[in-house]
Length: 396
Image (cartoon, rainbow, N blue to C red):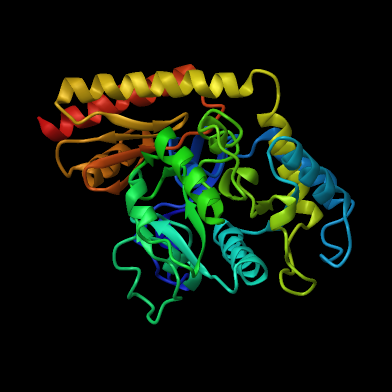
């Protein structure tokens, strides 16, 4: 079917999209309406952790859809209990609230922290977040985010989110006052440019929070579920957070997210938190299948191996082209370039024939890589070779 035959104007115009329609995908590959294939190193912005249409996910969805889809969150259902048990056993948390998106999970974390502040800190409500952070697109999570311009886009924003600088403990300390209830951050700032927090900073935040009686919230919407080489990124820092949020990879491509908290932080009263689709058996059955795949023996070892392969390859490209290195963790990585040709590289890579390559440039001088966690050694090598050819074509 030709692109002109699709009435794309029926969709609200919220972003610039190329003139193609994806119709199917398998693993690390997508196919558009003309039959052209693309090697996908974006994967829905780190969503499809098992690649497109993973067999275990398809099987879980088909089996569960024939049994039960949504009895309402007013009742227990088996898949949500199974996934909650897996998540708590694999982490330091005791309680789980399932949501539909990372923004919704982060909104829940903000509400939970404020409720905890009302119960335990005389109504304290401020949550210190980081400059250049990204926590979602609701009004509260946009206010919590440190993305430039978001403080005025839909003004007035939600009050109570002073901004510190990532990896600058003193900048956090200076913002603490009697109304502060929590510190919230991404272990690796994804939208901000794939900037990892340091071990010293994360451990310093934990000590600072303990000294002042504050909560420590980790937003693992992008870093969680194996993306950085461990099931959760916080596990690489030797800390125990009080609250964690998950999204993207937890559903492997379906709408699923989670808010996790330790027992003494889980202070919601009945009626304060909920949602029509939250924890429905169809999505949590898929989430359980995703978790089991990620938790299989050797899977995360392979993620670490492919992460090293990608890191080494990007460093080689950086050295060859006089760029500024690479950074990240596991299979969330970025190539820091010496000029603002990121958009041109993304565009040229997509237009390659006979097969395209899908990349992401969150800023002009940066390419971000978020492949499926089961991407093969050959696919990583192929992407690196193709990227080098694209850079050669653009710069020569």
